Image (cartoon, rainbow, N blue to C red; front, side):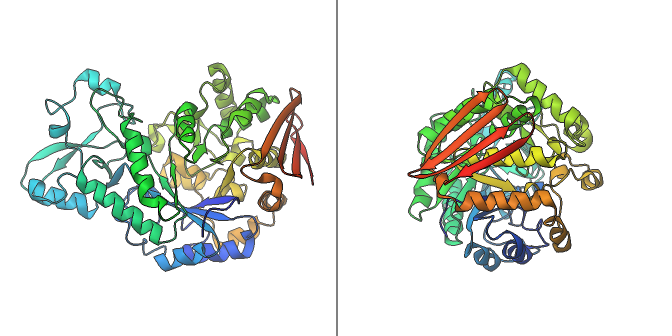
Length: 472
């Protein structure tokens, strides 16, 4: 099933029920009209990071089901799959073979070996400082070979996620095979996870390295385009990078919206939000929440720095159980670029404010994505957080079928699902349609969506957290 202009649910294979079969059942029972597409977060065998350290792509993790279960969901909903373009699992057959056979391995060029990459086998201090890093040192792990030798290979993220050498012919063949497989399994959209890190070049930041990154993007596009499949690069950084990608006619993420909406609702003024809504591209997927935290880096220069800091501090003071410690080593998370919380809890578990935030998202340009915890207006899961000591797990609750049946009876969830159904069914929200944004007063926001004679107008009071919708 191909992409349609209907809300996409983001969920793990085992978060709305225990597996893919139960996910399908829950979709059919409660969310059929509210959801048009499903981004099933990585459902492949994986060794870490809740699926984002894939060992292989040719099968579904058996605890979730099979590709047949994925196909059945794809009969009713357009699907998005993840391709981790930057890395593969340390436990993958490719890396294991490399450790076993070293230079005799057919996968010896799969990985970025420091001895080959850097001029003297090691980066200088200046070169390390240039790298856009997720760690306080050069990004590597030690590969310990069966023959007793050891060498450094590039590792941007966790130790289970070994970076791929996208310049090598072997990896390019692997990428082509994997993308073809995903297309054959009914993916409508392939999300390119950690895309901006994939190209490495000495004496650069090794992040969104131009022009090489464009060569990679167009190479991937050429593989999937013949199947009428869309690619979606996943990049958390300055909004100007997203704009560059949009200008090359690719779909992008709107990762700036979450903080802009929080700012508008915390302080009762829509100035920065209005400006963003007017400049946003039409071919984008909007978010308020995802499986990660709320991104802060994405909103830089769309608000003054002090306004961003003020908004971030309000999350900690006004949010429900939103604490700074959840972004520290104590909770296995040193990512300073995001705040770990559900969106509902970021708004203090306040129903009115939350529904208004969703209404603004649904009236924004593009196609909305709603994370499964957000669809059920979920509070911060402190129990899972403390049991795992993983900061991001605060927003990764596992819902049983019984729990879902109970949650959908809450008034806030009923109203949200009604809003979602309205967004999916009204013709005013045509992606190519028009949008007009007005601020009659600082705290009053009006968004008008129209397509031909059809229209829908959101009138929002950012101070009182109330809204009305008028429509044709």
